[in-house]
Image (tube, rainbow, N blue to C red; front, side, top):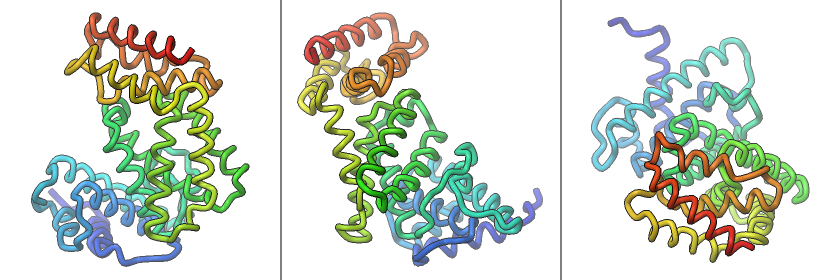
Length: 298
């Protein structure tokens, strides 16, 4: 097998940026792809150690990590860096398409430190909610990363404008089966990550946007009801739950319908109860849990 043209350059870029030392604005699409690729390995390996990250890039076993996941992330990073090199040569600017070709190319932060924070927040949110992986797979992970990197750009807006933009994204995502509650979780993680690397004031209007989402949702489904819904689902289904936190997902979808973010909760309910995913008895039990949540919300 011959080595593809540019493969050595791709490899060296990833190894170079495994030290996570670059800071400031990034104008090179290939460097952006390398920074994102390495940071996803940081989350997957649980390590910021340069030697560990370089070992992952070169295909060595990283103790305590999922070898298959690492291999997939490295392969994806190589692909994105290679595409970034083509963008560099053609003079194309950095946008979301650098690391998410399906994105359509919206704006993302180009600050290296904030870009890393965006990746960590996105991947942390995905890891905390297995529903993402079960339903959206690697595509969902890529969109979470670029959405996160776009959300950071809202920090500099006024609170009203930031809230408006976040509410727009919430409607888009909810229509695709991601209740606004999940965006709340993502925003909270993003605020924490940004503040940890850039200071308390760096999150700008993002905390207000997260609070606005939460406040709207809590008018119909408060935090206690989210927790109760999880308990009811766990009691009714035990090990047959489609995904962890099924009850909270049902409750959050009901909240979105109540506040007009979606027309109904079918984007979530239909997926959770699909016959190819769960037996009829499980689907029936899930619908009973949903009804209990509705009764409580009323």
